Image (cartoon, rainbow, N blue to C red; front, side):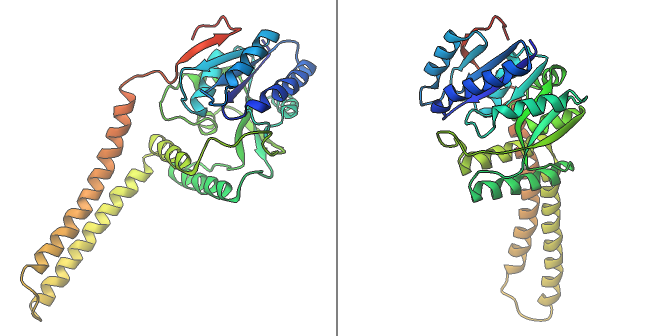
Length: 309
C-alpha cells in the first residue's frame, strides 16, 4: 500500500460522495495502490449508510464505525491504527481541505521530508473561531516553550514510521499536529487554499474548544501549574506585607478588634490554598483518567479491512 488517506467523518454526510470522487481521481493519478479510510465518529446525520455504500462499490474504501462519539482526534487515531500505507494523509471530510492538494503534499514529502503539513494562507472560518484559535495557540506556545504556527492544520502527509510513533502514544488527552511535531521528525509545510465547507456545520462549539484547550495544555505542559504556584506564593507575600502594615497602623490608630487577624488569615490561607489545589487537583485529575487504561476508542464495525488492532 503506497498511500492511506484517513478521514474522520462527522456532520458532513452530503460531502462524502464528492470527497470520495475527488480522492479517487487524485490518488489514482499519483500511485498504483491506495486506501481511503473513512472513520464514522457516530455522525448523527447517518453518514455510516453512505460509507457502507462506498465500501460495497470500491474495495479501496475502508469504513470504520465507532461505537459512539469519541471526538475527532481519537477518530483520527483509529484511522491511523488501521492504515497500512507507506505514506498516510490526514484530512477533514468537509472539503475545506482540497483532495487535489495531496499531490503537492506528496511531491514535497518525496524531497526527503518525513512529514509535510498544510498551512492555510487564509482561513474560511468565522472571525470568532479564528481569534479563539489564535489565542489558544499563543498560550500553548508559551506553556510548552515551543513556538507553534496557528496556520497549520491536521491536513498533512506522514511516513509510516511517523504514524507508528504517533500511535504508540496512547494518552487520553490527545492532539495531532502538536504530537507529531513533538516526535521530532524532519518536517516542513506548504501553503494551501482553505475553502468553505461543502456541507454541514462544525461540531466544535466554543465550549468544546475551551475544554479541548484545557485538556491539551494540562496534559502537555506543567508551566501553567508552576504559574499557579507562583501566584499563590505572590498572594502569600502580599498577605505578609499586609500583616506588617496592619501591625504598624495598629499602634498608630484605632482599628476594630479582630479585623487584623481575620484579613491576614484570609490572605495567607487563600494564597496557599490556591497553590495547593491548583497543583494537586489537576495532576490527580490527569492521573485518575490515565490509570484506568481504557481504550482510546471502540470500533463497532469495520468494512474492507483484514487488519486487527
